[in-house]
Amino acid sequence: MIRYLARRLLTMAATLLVISALVFVIIKLPPGDFLTNQIAELRSQGEAASVAKAQFLMQQYGLDRPVWEQYLRWIGLWPNPEGAFNGLIQGNWGWSFEYDRPVREVVGDALWLTLVVNLAVVVFVHLVSIPIAIYSATRQYSLGDYVATFIGYIGLATPSFLLALVMLFYANRWFGVSIGGLYDSAYAGQPWTWDKLRSLMAHLVVPTLVIGLGGTAAMIRRMRANLLDELAKQYVVTARAKGLPPTRALLKYPFRMSLNPFIADIGNLLPHLISGSVLVSLVLSLPTVGPILLAALKSQDQFLAGFILMFVAMLTVIGMLVSDLLLAWLDPRIRLGGDGR
Image (tube, rainbow, N blue to C red; front, side, top):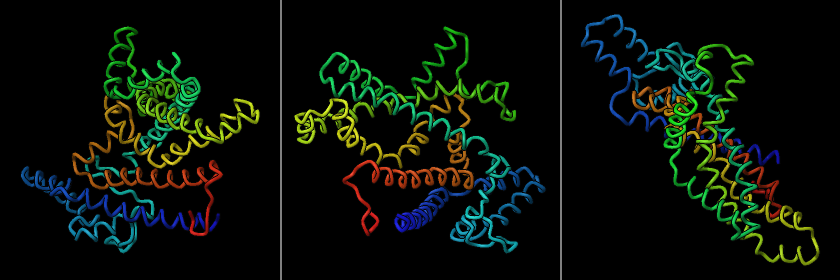
């Protein structure tokens, strides 16, 4: 297991290195960058001091150097003008030219708030969809099965941002309250206290429902289909014929085997939720990284956009490792061989 983990960690490091190169190249593909455009605008206005500052930042971050050198400086494998290595590897996330602040300060609470929202969605999806899927599969073609199927189709067909708009409208019309944001406006910019945390937990309900509805509906359909397939196999018939209690005959193997596809998807789940919740975050005014990433890409704020994309990539590779380990524990048919599989 130690050798397996070591190989996987080396593979993860190589994967992140390749992803970082692709991210940097894609961000640099559009002509120009934030500082170049800003310098041109400042020169047209005759602001010499501001132009000098922008030019200093270009030299400091190597934006006047070849692309390959800019990339190596960004990840921390090439020295800056002072001769020091100071990039992502060393914990320097870069400088946001649009906000004129370090990237670390710009993303601030948005990083962990994004994780909180999406982890709440993951928990909600599993807690709601698994019991419904089990009920629907064990009572196929019953009234409850038809109701679950109907609700699932509605959930799949309803765009999350549209549901967010509808909930915003009716919450204000019927109750006279705003359900946007992740805490009361009085706590904006304030340090975290128990009152602010309670406000966060209360406001977390709406984005969890809105973002998680589509995933819940999809998981119900997939889980039901997988469980029905497992329940029709010979080992389940044999277990029942030998008098194994119905609950144990269901949960011992069929339920565990039907979970395999979902465990394997853990690596894609959080990044998918983050990318899919950008519009919802804009509609509900959620202080997550989605709107920040969208603004950074529009303004070509390359270090800010690059760090957020690398953050999502990090979630992906970590999720892949977790899913592999869970699959080996969950499914007795999966064993770690000498090649690490």
